[in-house]
Length: 476
Image (cartoon, rainbow, N blue to C red; front, side, top):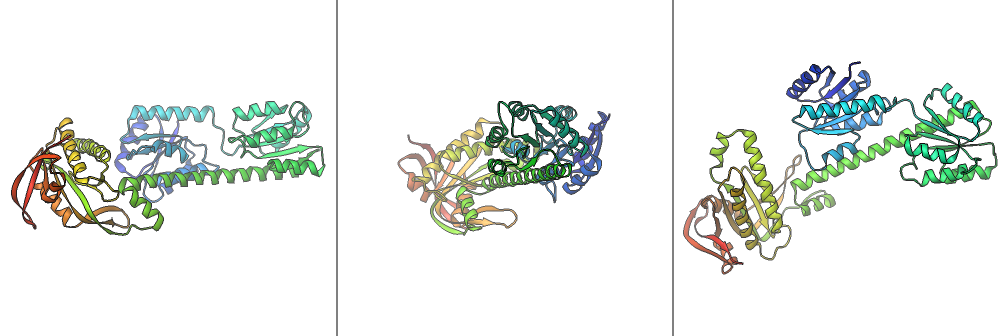
């Protein structure tokens, strides 16, 4: 039998490439361009497996997967999440959202095919139909077990397993996925009360509904069972109408609890992902203020050290080199920059093209910001020379007051403004490759701890002539 795969993807090129390759390997592929249609096709087509792009317009892949996993008709269809923007923890978040596996784009076909086959084997070998909850009947009396199993199957519950005593019941729950337990009270070895206590004390089992069954009609027994966590109570001999109503009610409540738990897990996953994205965009103190007040107030900050680093000849290199190579090499260098800045206690603000902007003493106090910036500049120049394509980097440093705040409503950007920022950028443009150039204000703070020399008065656009200093070596 040909396996049917539902591919939910909004990019036409990705759809064409992957569907043609999957069809050549014998799969029947249906395509949905967004999350809403993906959910609808999953219900109407009943695929054996779903490939779900996470970055969909409208209903995201995360939310579409959550809907599918919360619906009884589709919750057992395996979902492999696909993401072109792999971040740390993405796989764990995809699994927490209900997906069964995770892979990155661009697709590595052999790896993806292996995951598809693994999920399809699992689907064929171990998954049961979504509409067939598994019910465990626990009773030491064989006649009672037979009667209950027969009546449950007559009511449309074919997936029923039995246990003849309490210990065996716990073994079954340990190894199987049980949706409901019908538990007799009066049993040898371990009675129903003890079994119920063990189930409700176990963190992985406590949400399994348990209906107690007994010939004992003493109200104290009923109260004790409910107090221990039983969902309901059924007297013997069994009333078929009552049995059907209470089993159906208990399973429906479990389904709703499972859906709620999945929804809360998805919310937590989305919140964690949102936090990670905010921390990638904004400094930690800005994130904390945004959470507390729903805004970050713009402020003027005094005595801030501003560092710019840019690559000499980058525009020409960019025009003559394949885009993928440029981005990969620049990303590797920026990653190194971020580590260097963090090690010196400075804060990365942003990148502008090939330029990297960092500050000291802006959002957190730093005793000697200019010296930290000089050490960063020295390490950045060395880092650029240590990795391909061995770019020549120049660094400019200035200090003074800046205005800082957040721009944008849909896309946040933490930014700086003011004469100090403009001057630092122009100092950088005047530096030679492989050197650190400082303003007189910055140099005065490290004089005696750094070796360097004055370049004399340099004309800077909008500033006039300023004396600038080359920092050639940091003492100690």
